[in-house]
Amino acid sequence: MHRFFRIKDMNIIKTPIEGLLVIEPKVFKDARGYFVETYNEERYRDAGIDTVFVQDNQSCSSYGVVRGLHFQRPPYSQAKLVCCTVGRVLDVAVDLRKDSPTFGQWYGVELSEDNKRQFFIPRGFAHGFSVLSNQAIFTYKCDNLYHPEADGGILLNDPDLAIDWQIPEDLRIISDKDTKHPKMAEFDSPF
Image (cartoon, rainbow, N blue to C red; front, side):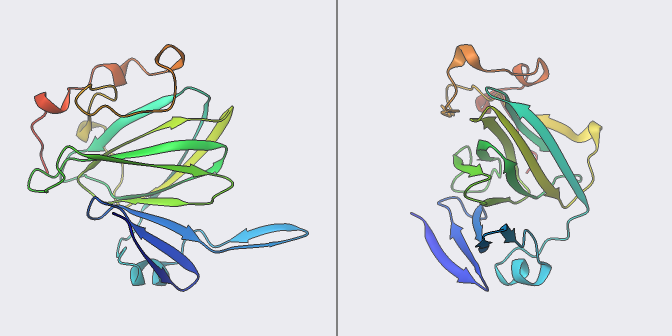
């Protein structure tokens, strides 16, 4: 069940997995185009996102690319605020918090240049996305710097997770690295 509330010109949707939030910022449109405030520390803190972001990232991918499911091990784990500024993606987070009642469950949301939605993913989740448009530019804020030695992942096509990436399997473009992550059943969570 989704719970919805409004904070100062943005809608916040609480997902069935505790901590995952979908954010719908207010978009101001006129004949010139649009304006949207993509981040405001005070508003996000009022929405329960009391996170200090220290790194911004951007990727550009073509249709069929599936990236993930990635995470950073403690003490370098990361919370992320993600959005798609060009095109459309299916964004997915998997709960890796071993004491969570939703451990091993995933939630996905479509993010696009049209809906301007953002997805807040706290620490303790694996994250990935699939590109549903010809091209997508994906941007995200992180609350911890990237540390390659802390890199981790879960197999994105794990049959036990059964994530529908909305891309036919024969059209998926996946890095070699992302085909070698363990399945959830083989994973010993550090969270």
